[in-house]
Length: 338
Ligand code: PEP
Ligand code: MN
Image (cartoon, rainbow, N blue to C red; front, side):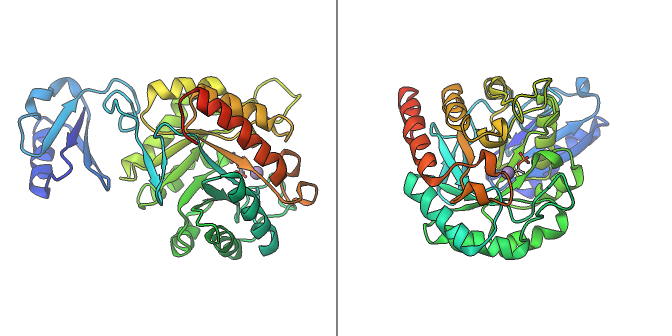
């Protein structure tokens, strides 16, 4: 059962709800978000009824949630959640585009990428400073220096930044560099200790789908972040592993339609990792907009042939600009802003 507190509910009101849950022999989980507090009753829910909580002061409403994921379920939150990233609203009838290189390499590379993605109309900039590479001998990223390069390049165009966190020990560096969105990559979707830590901070999170994760496992991973009190979560479909070997991953557009029913969280799509080939990226970006994605995250490099990671799936700034024109047409037909 979940008890949704009113936004201005005080500590005494929260404690009264906790006491009532415990008096029936159940455990309590409190998730204190910036907007409101959500209280979960854990245990034999048959002992509880909304009538026990709804009349209490400070309670907005309470209900049984049948799904294993609770806080992220659309069951209790019919309206779609809008995540505000430094004024860019994700989940509000718009296709918001995040673009930039796979990896932060040099300041000139980042400056050229920022110029290109900003000119084409991207609203946020991406760039990996810490890279999860399959081979330990491959480029591992610029680390903290990379955070500064991304921040400097993006700031010249007023773009908020998105970058991947792999290790909880780097969280303070992310906060110091004022990272606007923390990306949790596909390889860490079920790194539960990492999820718990990002659940404690007040920074929006993009949770990428594990490459072999079911939608239910993915939503349970999001539940870890929400349970910690961070409710500013966006899900990112980035392609899954199947029997097909003709391309890197299979972009699961069906997942977007299913997630829109199952969760109130915004859903974005990464057609770059989702296909692995720059030639397929524009078509899949259009498919994502058409199926209802709230945003796209796209790899753009000023010189893909020389990229230190994911060059084959990276667009040049010129190709990215053409993609934006064609996705805008789809957005318009669907009544979405871009
Ligand atoms: C990335 O965004 O560059 C990345 C490594 O993504 P994923 O975790 O989806 O592979
Ligand atoms: Mn990449």
